[in-house]
Structure formats: structure tokens, C-alpha cells
Length: 378
Image (cartoon, rainbow, N blue to C red; front, side):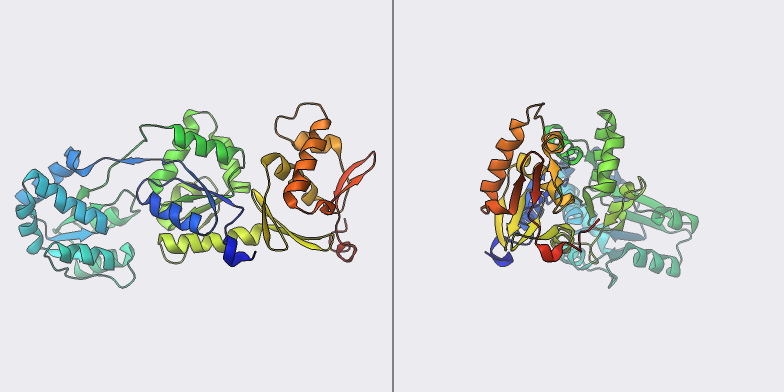
């Protein structure tokens, strides 16, 4: 079996914090072989129930802006649909027809045109920074600018417009709230703390902030930060999403294009690159999160076995005592017989028992190929 058959993320477990478009992201990850733990860090208030959006819509109908900035396709469509449900759809569209309508990217342009409108301009970069540059170059003093908010902070955007003399009206098409059921989020948090995840993905800054908030409530914020700094890869869809993590001193990884597909492609590159590859007893052994590739064949391994193999792989070719291996076993107690039982299951899972040698009265070692001794010499 080669990588094309089992997928580049086979043997890895990835956490997903997203609420919106979570199914799409999870499908992309599983299609590439990953196991997924989904713990939505947020829920989105339904637009039709959102009194803040209704108030902003009425205000703009009553006092039309000079400019409207549409930032997301789903948000713009949802706004128009919600207004229609409230009986203000035609009035809102009439206002939008007469203003300078800026669309952040091609998907937003599609939503604008589907509503029977035409955008005045759209940046080629899909960047809000380019939108801001255009507005400031035009001059914003005395202008009234409606900004469709999309659930993530826009650092400096509103401040720069306000400093230039504009009046900015926020249109909160998404409003994030903590999840009603925190059970899945707690399970994801526990998986991060237990290093059961190889990576965790973030598609919005509020989701990252919500995960830290939940960790704070449970008294494990410092432990969460430590896990994300040292052991669990934090992957963000873009630089704005990464801000809450970077504020905690956590290194983040982001794709060049801020989309779910490139995010998954980044994981397909980074996680296999971090796995440990060893020449053992004439075989190529690649140790992943919850599985091992032996000569390219995927071998799922139980958690106890992965704990033992991880310790052996950290000192390849060296003997590791039963006492040290016992300490690595989760909940094993003091009976060294548990090591023998877990080791037997590990060997069976690997399908090649000779990968791990028993050293009588001393412990166990990976049977590292002699030609590799110098490489791992301490």
C-alpha cells in the first residue's frame, strides 16, 4: 500500500474547531486519511433572529451610506435573505443599488450579482488591506461607510477609516456565541492536552479565542498554551485567525491562499514532514500520530502501543528499561507485566515482530540497522 492508497494524512489525528463549513473541512481531511476530532468552539446566531442585524439594516435604509463593503459571500447572501424575511428586502436592495459597493473577492462578487446588483470594484488580491488602501486614496472624510462584519476582527481597518474622518456603520451578519453544548469542545480540548491530536485547525479568530476562554474556565489555559507551543501543530486559515494564538506565543502555520483546500494541503505537507523515519531490521518505519507505516503499509497501533513505540523511537537502537516503558503507559500502575502485554500487542499491530528486540533482564530496543548506528550515535 502506498501513499496514494492510504492518503498523506493517514495515521494523523486533526482537531477541527470550526462551526461554519465544518463538514466541508472534515470531509477534506478524511478524504486524505486523517482521523478527525470535531469540537465546535462557537455557534452562529441565526440571522433571522439577530436583533443587532435588524437594527443595522433599518438604520441603513433610513439613512443610506455612501459606501458598502461586502466581505463574505455567505454573509452578504444571508443579510439580503434576512432582510427579505423581515419585509425589508426590496428597500435594502434599493439602497445598495445607489451606493458604491465594494466586494472583497470573486465569491462576494457572485453573491452581489445573484442579488441583482453590480459591484463598483473588487480587489484582485481579495485583501481587506487593498480595500482600505482604495478607500483612503479616494478620501473618506465625511463619508458614511457600511462594513459587513464577518465574525473576525479587522485590526486597524475601522480605526483607519475613522481617523480619516469617516463614519463607519458595522453590519454584524455573523454573531458568534459560545456553543450551547460544550461537550464536544471539551473533548477536543482534552485531546489537545493529552497530545492525542497532531494538529488543530482554526478558521476564525473568535474560535481560537473561544478555545482559550473554555480552557480558562476549566483552569487549564497554561497547559493548553504549552501543548500548542510544543507538541500540537496550530494551523490557521489566515493571519487574522492566527492573532489570538500568536498573542500567546504560539507559532502558527498558514497557507498562502486563505482557503480550506490550501489549509488541508499545508497539513498534508507539514505533518508527514514531522514524522520520524527509521531504518529498523531491514524495514523503513515511519512513526505517525496513531499509526505506523512499515515499508509504506499503514499499521494502526493502539494508544498503549504508540506510547511504547514513541519512547523507543526517541532513543533508537538503545535499550529502554521496563520501568521507563511502564511510566510511559497510560494508567498502567506498577505491574511491569502490563509492559509485556502492551508490547505483544504492539508487535502484532506492526506485523513484523523483529522490529522490536527483547534484551533479557534489561528491556526492549528498536532493532536499528547497523548502517544507521553512526547517525543515531550519542
